[in-house]
Image (cartoon, rainbow, N blue to C red; front, side):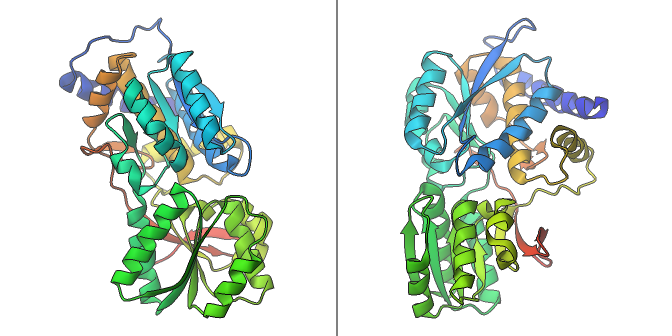
Length: 373
């Protein structure tokens, strides 16, 4: 744990030194001060795995920087946008937080105009919807946009000889963004989308849609959404005799896939952020070790890595700015080449980052990287 804390302290001190040279300090945090920041996301319900895995990374970061007096107030949305708005109002109007970490794309976009008006920082570790790029000057993310995933998957599909693809996606900013990115890129490469339909989150049965897809005789099926729905689609497709390949968005990478779809998930291809838990880089090794100590599990996802990085970055900027959100915003914009465990972070003028995307597949009940990405 001392090694882990040492690495974390070095990262924070390095960033503070950079910011001290770039940002005019208006209010510096004293050791006796406690700064509260918010978290808005699903911790229960069908999307709970997204919030819980992100929170694991945040908890590890908070352990490392526990002398910085950063406290996180968690608000569980249960995956409902109306709850996200209520949570934002509580955190900003009652708790007076200067910054909020938000995880779901629809929540980010719903909250963005409120954050802009209130001058509250919104940082998302995992939301990928394309529209977030234009969400406002106070919204940042450390996750690559959905376009990178669409291009990666469409290139794979064309190389595999798939000419006709059916798409089935959740009717949310997340699913629609992945679909639009994939379909646009696939068509530009000469492919044909023979079926494209949306469904509501937590739909219990997909047989009607799958039978329509079967009638179109595509070469593969593209799906995007949350793991529970996608796992159900794969299971039901195999029950209907559809042996077509599945191409999926990153949300499929969770143990629920195996709990629901079992061996039917074998061979599914999906895109994912290029977090490497096997890296020999000291910061990543310390992070992975801390995660194992926290969860007693060897499985670790990019969600957790990005949650960790979000806290480390915010904490470092807050040390220099305290609750001055204009200062925090400037500090975030000035972050360049920060060595996050989820990838190097440099914010552009839109509060966006660029990161590498890889392909993974389900092999023998495990998520493994596809060779020759």
